[in-house]
Image 1 (cartoon, rainbow, N blue to C red):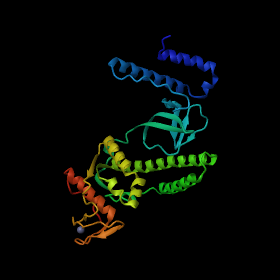
Image 2 (cartoon, rainbow, N blue to C red):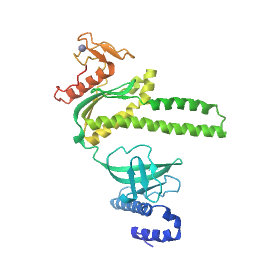
Image 3 (tube, helix red, strand yellow):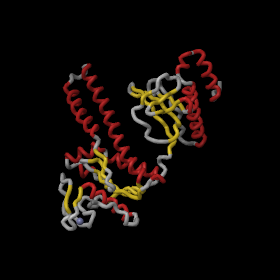
Image 4 (tube, protein in one colour):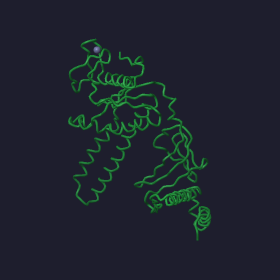
Length: 332
Ligand SMILES: [Zn+2]
């Protein structure tokens, strides 16, 4: 028998009668799975024809990457942090509100490590560059605050993350004391894994928040070139660097900037952003770590260390792109 998409749909109709439990989920669940399979085969045959590496569609074993998708408007909707999917009597509470505004296209329900997840695909205009109101910004990544922008906006280091990291250390110590192969050890191990996952999510949430803010509001974003390896020498600083995930933050900013058509300028790593007075241009000899503010001996301007650095970075970016130097952010 030669299979076609139509034949598969017909077969499914027969199966629905034979096995009533099929009716417990939306019909579209299976129909979409058949559509996906059809697409997988179409692409496979196209690659074979072209002489490319074909990559036969992978068989999906039950229990591994279990998921299904709903793509049709009446089959699901989101309202006020709750999700409805067809055939389910209760609405599902969402862990967080939708990150984007726009039209919902698809929901994918998946099961991972015994937990269910819903991924929502949104057709959004949020990345439309015309929403960017301001021309440029400089961003200093700090220790006290995660990010300080030259317009005065700051993003505090995630307190919940800090709390979780402390808990993780405690749980890891507890795990190390448990007897190998014991039930208690297995339980402790699971607790550590769960917390790791939570920390991962908390970290991502902050990074998304900062990168979204920057790319949604500014056409030019200047950041420092974080020589993470160099910073790692200072133990305390290294901890903060790792906690904040600066490397990932830079990736997020660059990726979203591309989507939103903004430009990212990376300042040379020897650019003295913290040592220069943003009011008069005077350069200090050295920065003392742990000092939050300073007074310029030349023009007597009082500077918050990180804010001053971010203003210098903004200027660096504007100079690099040869933008009109006028609308510099003023520091009081
Ligand atoms: Zn000065």
